[in-house]
Image 1 (cartoon, rainbow, N blue to C red):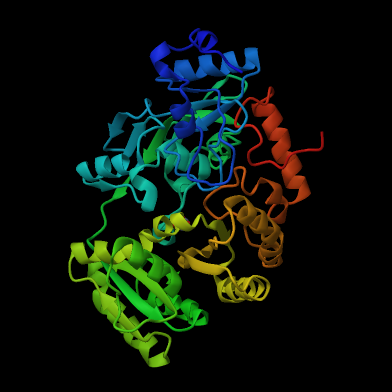
Image 2: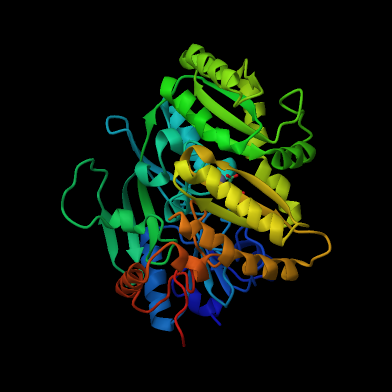
Length: 461
Ligand code: MLT
Ligand code: ZN
């Protein structure tokens, strides 16, 4: 157990919290089902303080759990065993902006929406976006290589990181890439840190690329009777125009979000599935052509198109509000990806498995189908306690992950591995890969102080 007296050798007492309420708030993310038991929460304010913290942790064998906006869904920021949570809430500033480079330098605790707003003030655009952008922090986005709703056009967080300063678990301060576009000088530690879930280093500063502002966007929601046709619809539209988003949700997901946010149905009649498409205003005529073709083919039955920015935002709510609307059901969440071409077959495989083995469970599908990423949420029946339900979820996972593995997919497309998927990593990564990952962990974090027990399967004692 760490005492605040010893932590005050590195930080001011106002930067340390140990009251039970704070421990519960900062000791977890949005994931359910894990014990929350940190010993303290600390709020560093500078790179120097991050280095001091790492030196302190090494000297006293204290474990550190980096924590951003705590919106994670795989338990990557859960502190279960007396760790010290390192919150980036006070490292939330924009430090510099270069209009010529279109690069903003910021601290990791900057909230994603604040980076987006800053970009807009400069007449630019930060395109990585998702429902939790109002709370998530850019450092957490980088640590999990966050994806979201615009990946089909703009890529992942990884594609926007121009440089970073990071304090490794061995205490070294690495200055990676410095905003360069070309840099062929060997191993790129920036990319190693992206998606490493705080297991190798504490990200202390980031250089982020910004994009030119896009045209105003138009949103279309279409009814799709059969998921098998989703790919044909995607191709029909992509052949004619550049899509900014191609999202999918089942009617059950729509019902939940409608009930939760009191939203009207987008179409006159209910359909089994829906796709939400977004594109530039100037592409409207091409989108209408693609829509007509899909109607002729019978892939679509109806559609609605936004007539204003307000209507576009209202249609987006149908997709972006789903996760929050399911939270009261404490769902067993899966974040899976396969190649786009494998999506219909994979959906059918998983549906068959769940419907045959667990006919009483409600299964809610939605996701970023344009990039092969599907969210499978199994809703907890009232008859099962949280513990019982998670136990069942954990027994279902191996079978679902076998179906993922059979199609060479990923057991975590964008939420990360954290605690939730740790024991299943082998379904997506080979033994040789995992042993190389362990080697890197030893190299970067020789005393094993950073985000213990996350990401890598535990080894036998
Ligand atoms: C989403 O796509 O809505 C997010 O990844 C959150 C979730 O999967 O629940
Ligand atoms: Zn998602």
